[in-house]
Amino acid sequence: MAVTPRQLAAAAAVVVVALASMATHPPASGALPGPPGIAALSAPAHAARPAKPKIYTPRARLQVSGCVISVSNANPDIGDSSEAVTVGTTAGAWVSLSAGYATYTSSYGEQADQNGDVVFKLANPNATPGRTVSLTAQVRLQGSQAGCEGSFTPKALACEVMEISQSVVPGGASATVVVSSAPGAQVRLTKVSGSPVWGYAKSAPSGRIYVAVPITSSEVGRNVRLQTEVAMLGARAACTTSFVPTVRG
Image 1 (cartoon, one colour):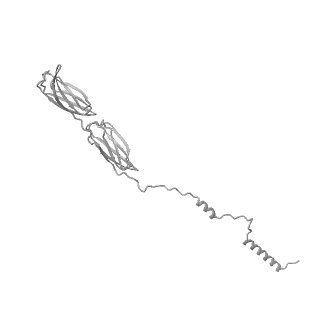
Image 2 (cartoon, rainbow, N blue to C red; image 1 turned 180 degrees about the vertical axis):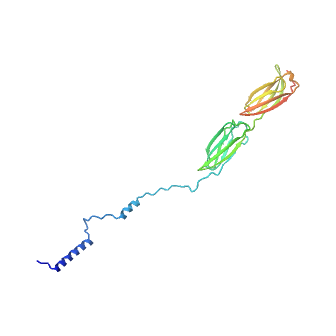
Image 3 (cartoon, rainbow, N blue to C red; image 1 turned 60 degrees about the vertical axis):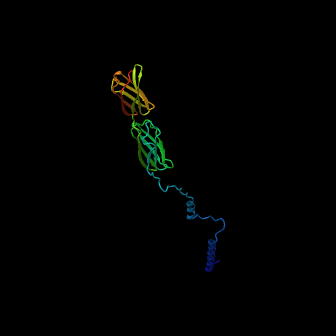
């Protein structure tokens, strides 16, 4: 049977309509989902990125405001070990203190309290009498630092000798003299006039010693001079006295 051109055109129109219907109404089941878009992949990765931790930074660094040294006694007694040295500075600063004696140096270190003070108790019984002890402090806090100086001077070594009595003793006569100096000083007393020359050495733990000086008959009525030397911790001192013997043995 022959197909006319009009029949061919009608069949083509039916095919076009069927294809258009399939494009606008896809099947409800059996179809595979298409690939996800770029936005769908990038969003979850961006949301999962962890936040950086915050680091605390002080608004300003603390700086030492300087330092000052003060001493409990600028002129302590010889052998006094109660000397206290106070360093005033910024609270929390580390304080280093050096005390320079005649033959050695003592070092100390401590942190300043909430008032900015540090008190160092110096054990200085061996400080040389009359010689200045130099004090040097260094303070440090968060990279800043400062320094200060001070000193104290133990009392100078001295002596005093005086004749207090004369008496007759077995075998002759004697004059009693007293020597006053620092506790623990070494004392040497010498008769520098008359005869014979006489020496005496003794420590004085109480600061005072009594010495019986022999008197010869040839010295009665004549001036007798005594020379006294004391020594302690590298320091020395001298003193003299004289008397006229009036007693005979």
